[in-house]
Image 1 (cartoon, helix red, strand yellow):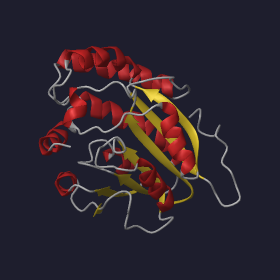
Image 2 (cartoon, one colour):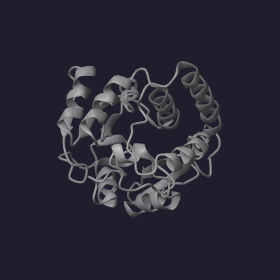
Image 3 (tube, rainbow, N blue to C red):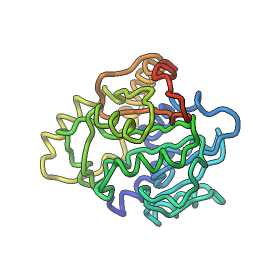
Image 4 (cartoon, rainbow, N blue to C red):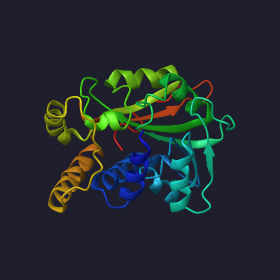
Length: 254
């Protein structure tokens, strides 16, 4: 990712509608699985813009390969435990986390083997622990923002499902998210062919308010239903306990 994009992320964390909507969506999906005082890994935490809500639910450890991102993370959360690490080789004990969140990481060109990252995230989960992923969808939909964020891949639904199953995780759900953004994204992709620009530039207040409201409506739908497509895929999976296979229907309706 471009260094300036990290600065934009840190600046936009509290004000940009997408981050607010994404935190609300992730909390809606993940919180029901965070009982007690869980230990949670924010994998590829970046500046903390997406996973900042996790501190309301347990002890959070942020992990990222980019020191600048972790500097912004610590600046916003003094004293927060962080680890500088390649997610494919985490310096963390096996089975040491109750949950892991990984938001828009596997798509990146720095990640040469997404399957290795998912296996490593599965390794650090305790049996019965949950993993939540959010990744860009629609492989052919490359836009100017993808070039700024160094996107190497966008995923089909079965791509994510296969990554989870290959790591001995049972998918509870893999649903589309931000489906309402698909039409404008296709228009932007056709207009921005070959260019590079961030989606984190300030959004006009009226537009931001409208998009926030639509995202809230979609979020209410996703509490009980999946979407067959979206600008992103949201996946939730559980690590099987020894000798036990999780029921995929658990959590399919939250």
